[in-house]
Length: 407
Image (cartoon, rainbow, N blue to C red):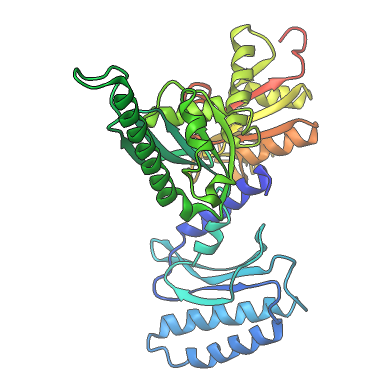
């Protein structure tokens, strides 16, 4: 799923998640790609018959209307779309005694995994939300002879799963011990510690083995090599090791250092790609070069076709609202926070302007970028660089192909 499609899909789910019914009357129907449409229609007609037994007149009326609306939509399909479909239907509560009946068909970016008819006061969206979950997972192990930390990198988040300290004595022996005996005891302690780290890694990482794209091991030399080559890891995990890296820290902070050091090995991971993009943008900002930020400035450069890469915070929630004067026809566009109402007065006629269009700002800018051949990068707020883009630059920035003269 590309970043723009993922963003649009997330926004759709956010919208649906806000809807509430006044009773258990919102219908969600999951239809996998291999499901027979005639069988689905037959079950819905059976549900329609059973709905007549619902005691509440309002709920009975709303459920019946929802089922009939879905049955009408199904008549348009001989078979499900390539990935199947999810149909939602029901009367949503708008507040203030107002309500509205909606019916929508969602064709998800991944195959629908189950057949399910669900009726509740909210739409059942969990299987769709799972499609948004970051699938890239890496195991992380950092260790020296004093301590070890084990974690996972899931998408852009680093999570500590286990930590261990050792009883390995220092290199200087106690008085009265022969150097040979001391070294032997020390080697035994090191071996036992490595074995314990391997056991902890197995316990922490093996449950993720189906999702793990690889395991990174970090630490000083020769510790990490001894651990890796000594066969201390479970054989299924051993096969997933993709690199050994020198790191200075072997506690939780070492996990972050390991990801940084392994950036070349993780080039395709969004965390590192975002970091490189934002670093490139900041270099241009510092030298007052080919960079722009803020909605209006970026919008101007997009209109000139001067943008190489558009950078937008994926959790930015603003809308571009267009108004028109009912008297003179003059139009005006304003950017405002999502779901905000604002009264606009025509300066010429001194009458209230009518709202005629409302668009998601990020999707609108993405459309402008794609029309001019610019790349679009949706940046998460989970990394330090992503937070900086949103907080310091308003969540909208661009790396330019060139800066037009006089700008």
